[in-house]
Image (cartoon, rainbow, N blue to C red):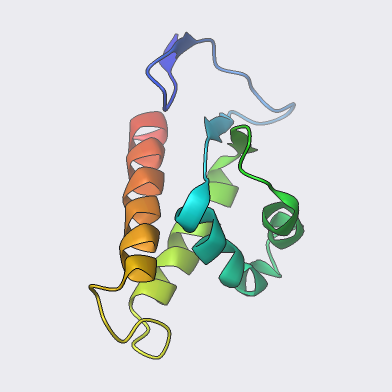
Length: 112
């Protein structure tokens, strides 16, 4: 039994041939807007960029471990780019920082 990002106990669903666990996470509002701005950086991630572009934030999105790793890396690079976010106090930076913490927390609680 595992606990998902919403605190609900669930059974691990395994992808055929893998021991990977799919994490469901809700990304909405400013977090989603900012993530979509950086989706182009996910072009090499087997369709993750197009999934994020189509995602509406109405339901939780299912992400595999490699999806989570890609999102965490892309968000981290964006947060550290002073051309994208000259002020670390801007609402857009704060929203993306919140998403970064949410992704890291879900990753650690699922895969560590």
